[in-house]
Length: 198
View 1 (cartoon, rainbow, N blue to C red):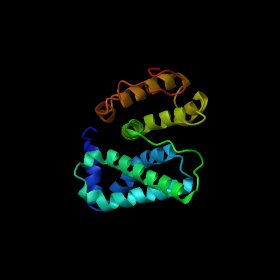
View 2 (view 1 turned 45 degrees about the horizontal axis):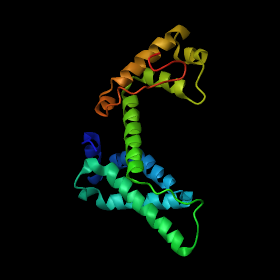
View 3 (view 1 turned 90 degrees about the vertical axis):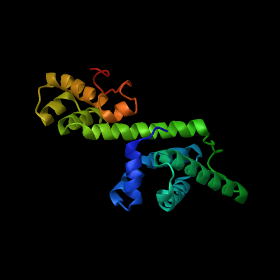
View 4 (view 1 turned 180 degrees about the vertical axis):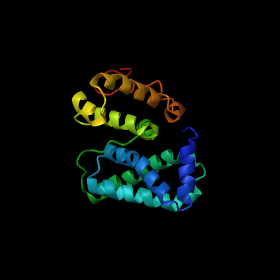
């Protein structure tokens, strides 16, 4: 893993009893924990138990992590071990899971970590945009996306200006230091109503 200063800072703050930093860590890495659990095809109840155990272990170990930047890997390994414990216990008791579990190997875990880091970087870069850009892009990527006439009325801009403004907002997003640090500026970032550069 790259030495991500934002992860190091979050770990340090959370270890110092900063509740906001702890909440941010959980928000950032809960999808990683959940994603690994789903690979093992655990029930929602078992996923909740695994998640609680992982976060409890992190509370116990947070101040002792030798490499704070390696937190995503630590979480992935701890989650996998907890999932294996649940699967082994179920097999020992003769209870079956919904399907045979798909054991998360190192490649799958690395993919989950990268996906989590990418999503966190995108959220961070999105938060750095101006409120106007955030609102425009949010309206374009909502499900279902807002029509140009709705966007025009809400943001009080001509419909013909929506496409060029979207392009400028997406370019600012691509140039974000957060995405550049993750080498994501080269990836396509699309919104409905046009290609990446539209």
